[in-house]
Image (cartoon, rainbow, N blue to C red; front, side, top):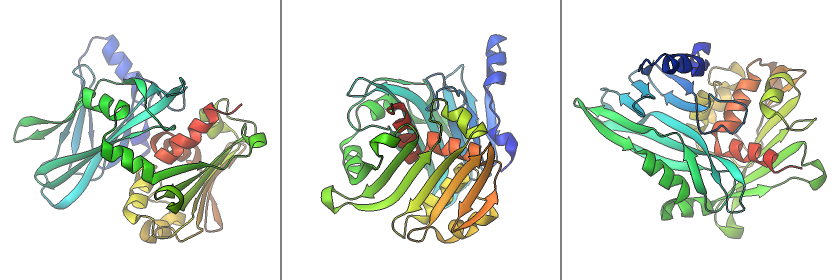
Length: 321
């Protein structure tokens, strides 16, 4: 993945707005593009955390902050329902216990032939209802035969976060988050198990942990310059391969040679993937093999902000003493 596709665009955007120039940003080619959120980011000190991802070279997206629109263009004909991209918007909301927590809205955009379709879901680090939802006011559209088809309105995004559908509530019940932390180590560790199923029948699927030896007061800074370890362990085989492949793309890791077995066949039971750094020098480990990986902090930052598992892990830091 070209490094330029990860460059923040907030400085350019601020200049254009300050100069009174109404100019849209355009994204094309396969890649992951970040842009500023005015509603907050999970790793607080950052601002460029909203995301547009394009899965192939047939799409072009225009982001017009002045008009409040994200416009997809894609004239390619797809034989099957195919994911062509997504939009991830970050914000914040008030949890049932009164805390302000980071939240995100994920819109997956697909095409079947020339027909557009979407799926939308919310990410939050805590269970229960949310209120006072704050999210950038953006409308997502697709160009169809010269006309604009609305894929998601700002109002729909807010409702998805604050008032999830019955189907979404059932899906959340199927995904259980178990806190593995020991009280004495909460300041340095996040540790969860994701189990799939209902009640006692739920089966562990993934264990994820984050260790920052001197605590998480400034997690974004620690990821770039400090010592830390992020570990993912598969607790079962047959985790969805398409999800694994897309995550490697989204987090900038699909071309890493060490991870080609993971990209081709997925996780075997008990496989471990580790990202980490010692004195700011990044490394990557998989199936017992370790390589230097200078992009470790950037990949971990994207995972902790943009994935449900990562949002829960980073959210545990906000509740640590």
